[in-house]
Amino acid sequence: MSRANPYLVSRLQGYTGTIFSEMSALAVATGSINLGQGFPDSDGPDLIKRAAMRAIEAGHNQYPPGIGIVELREAISAHQSRFRALDFDPATEVLVTAGATEAIAASLLALCEVGDEVIMFEPYYDAYAACTAMAGARRSVVPLRSPDWSFDPATLEAAVSDRTRLVLVNTPHNPTGKVFSRAELEVIAELCRRHDLLAVTDEVYEHLVYDAPHVSLASLPGMADRTVTISSAAKTFSFTGWKIGWACAQPDLLAAVRAAKQFLTYVNGGPFQYAIAEGLERCDEYVVEAAATLREKRDLLADGLAGAGFEVFASPGTFFLTTDISTLTDEDSYNFCRALPERCGVVAIPSSDFYDDPDAGRHLVRWMFSKRREVLEEAVARLARLRV
Ligand code: PMP
Ligand code: GLN
Image (cartoon, rainbow, N blue to C red; front, side):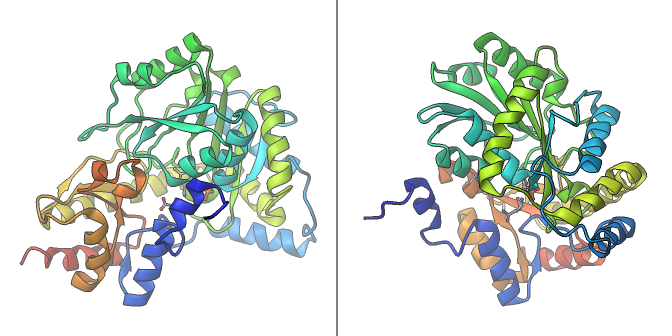
């Protein structure tokens, strides 16, 4: 019998890694269009790339400071103030991490004791369950209900126990594309204040919003002192391989998260930190234009999927669309996605992987639309063949 962490062992059985790497490997093996794993097929701004090359040339190649270089912390702080009206002191309230993934892991490790409970909304990004398990904590899930992925405040209330430590909120939300409204965030904030809970927010898609404004939970009354706000350069600037993320919180919370990061990676991404600092300072216009382009791509893929016979749910944010496949097939989403490359040369992600009970996501499939227009057009043409 394995003596490894049971949650991790259960996830690895039958997988070549996560569902994302399994489906990406399938895309490569079959030469399919990969609308599965969330990475764009074009790089972000040249000026950011050039800044990274300059930083390497300039010799910024040894360990950066544990908290992150001052230029990047100042740029993150200024970005939070410009876009979210949030005030973080770059000296004590901003931490650079190895992507948002490490910020999430470090926050859960830092803030939970063994046996504590973490409330998260389901479907949830896979790392949340894994990191909660690695922290020895338990997850308590609150369902988001299609078609608009709203939650029932009474169910949220019922998820609170005397072991609840924090609420984990992802907005804009992977996999559904939901953007939590201010009213919904107010319900969560009120719960946190009343039960004295912490909050961790994953806002990596903060700039990928199309029909609704992004609101940071930390900006609501009474939340600044109890929230760790996480984001990343990966989606904003289309550099998913650089793994530059950050966490912002009041000094006590941030010091705890920093202590966990210290023993996870210590530091990360030296020269890339300089480049992302420049990106945050100089790329506001790029970010707006990128969202406008992505919105068109979302509409192209949504129309194509609807034309192919799927029920398509509205996606006001992220670069993902969710469909119900039961209009086309009785198969479960995993088997459907496994067979899709053979059938039409396209790869997607079965959303069942984002649920505790795979039956809950049995008919749901996630599609990623940050691909070149001609690639999406070809994918749509291939998907149209499914019906005939
Ligand atoms: N959170 C969510 C919701 C994500 O979809 C992802 C994946 N891109 C991450 C965190 C990880 O971000 P990073 O690549 O910066 O670690
Ligand atoms: N965040 C990306 C997604 O949701 C995948 C990152 C990963 O492979 N872990 O598709």
